[in-house]
Length: 303
Image (cartoon, rainbow, N blue to C red; front, side, top):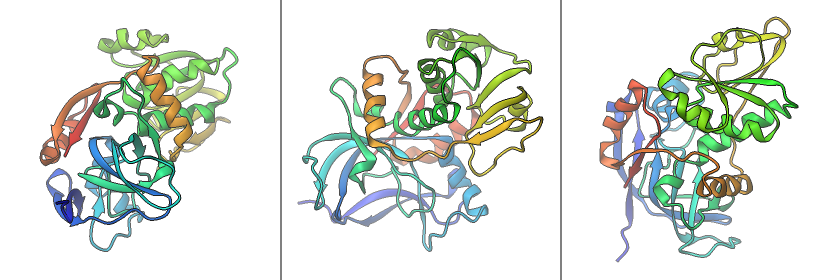
């Protein structure tokens, strides 16, 4: 007999990792255009730490009366579909829960999402790895859109060994950018393995900086006069100076593009890095570990 409730991780009063609770909520049926997904893995991202810490509550972006759900990207198996959904039960999918003002998230045993926020996981890609792809690869792809075509110009990617930065480093080359990755010395092999040049210390004068490390004003300082800065923090846009154009990505679901990014992952063209797969019950300790920094690859929570 199917359970009438499922477990999901939330914060009621945000206060960091220790404020995360795992609660039971009722199972509901998907509505028009929606699917219910049994979660196989949910990736842990820095934005989740910010939600649990109350950053977005403080900005006035969260208006949930009872609790706020955690977790943006997921992979799993479709267990039910609503009306107007042409997706078979049993399909393996990955997807994105976007926005911070919601009472549910991917840190859960299951969730209901719009079918068009998911993409099929190709054969040969396991679900825990697929769970690490949606948020960071879509953020990177949409950031590269802000850059446009490179035409051989120089692009510095900060945080090039990180999750978003690694994808930007790979994808920007497809648009004709001459990419240099800024990262720690021990990450040089990884960055060069993506086909980019490498630096551990950036000096100013770059045509364009894609600031995956969220250096913000320090990243703007690396751009030449009249150049372009592309950031990753829509809630904190750094001030423009010296004629520099400042653009900031705000990630949004894109099923067709996610499908292509998942295909590029299974083919090995894009990096897929799982640091560890951890039970959902250990979410607080995972958040503490991520907060320390320096982890290459994603923690994936498994319900």
